[in-house]
Image (cartoon, rainbow, N blue to C red; front, side):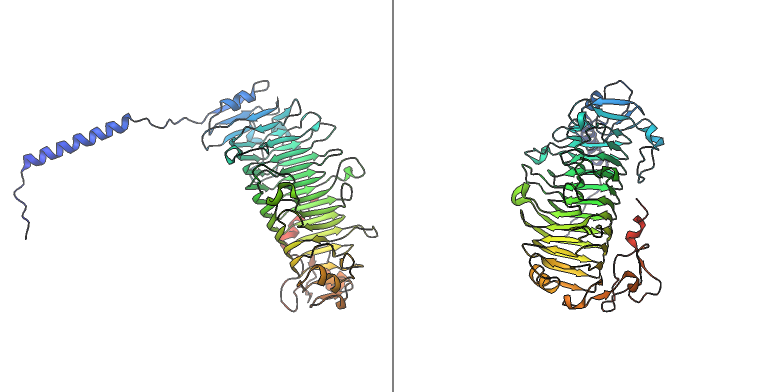
Length: 505
């Protein structure tokens, strides 16, 4: 059957068009009458010396900028309120043009004239956060300490949050200067117990405490992510610490990156009452990357002078774990001992990679208990590869529960008196079989070592000179035939990626 369209009636078409036009106009008018989102132009507010910074924080809206008069001091404590919206409220200096560009670390002396200063009049943090506070960014601000150096200079989160909604988030510190101001020192620079926390291009110094642990940055009641990049970080007990305390939500610091920082302890702290322990420690953490950092000066005092600790502690119960950690391309210099690997508490330690690092001047020759590269127990999945290790003591001191899934390959390391040594076992194969069952230990240049102590192919030299290795430049001499493992063809020791940090002290 065919369909035939009859003659067009122009009058009917006119009526149809008019009806449609009226309907469209009515729809447009209806939409115009609906409530529309209010757009508010971000404000820039100048707070001068003597004016109320807390009031400015309370009044600020998402996207606003609060400029503080350069060189003025603002006395708190201050609390960051919870706001709606996902635009950052920026607290910065009125002399922003005098700051270094983004990506360049601030120099407290060079840039002092540009920095407004925030301090606390009592023992409360200079900056704290309300429950659920989010989207605050500090640029070019100096933070002094609390009264008598008690507690945290900056406290993100309370560590007592009972729901995820209460955890602060998106808090950033960019080119800031944080330091103690009390003769008593300061317990902590930043307690970073929030989500999406950034600390970049900043300087945290003189964080020390008598009879108490102190950290430049510590994070425990958080599930991350946290970004710590291109900072100078100075603290007595631990320069950076992940874990070390529990949280009601049983959180694990996760997806954190520590990159391009200088972690240091002042030589003038030796022989004082400030409690010195480690440069970097993870007690609870998952998927943490630590790369291209310089870590200098650590000695026996509060502990045995071990620079780097991966040590599960059951402060967070069964939720405590260390897993999927990469420690790569770092320089560790001037420490009594190297690393400690301890996975005997909580849910244990799993999958740790230590690759392409330079451990320089580990130990004091002739000092008992000094110069050990690694102390280890109870780990599952430990890879140590392509490191250059200048140590004066044992390669390992193993004890208690064995470490499984151990790979030690293509390292340059000193055997010294005992090499691989464990509690109650002879050096070498007896220790390896008991404390590192199934281990692959091969392709290493072991200075002063003996072939009869090892199962697999390694290379043994009387000195670095015999290896053709220049310790000052941390590289092989031109034409050295030992630059590559003759069996696997892989590079021996750490490669050039780490050497760019050797000039920093």
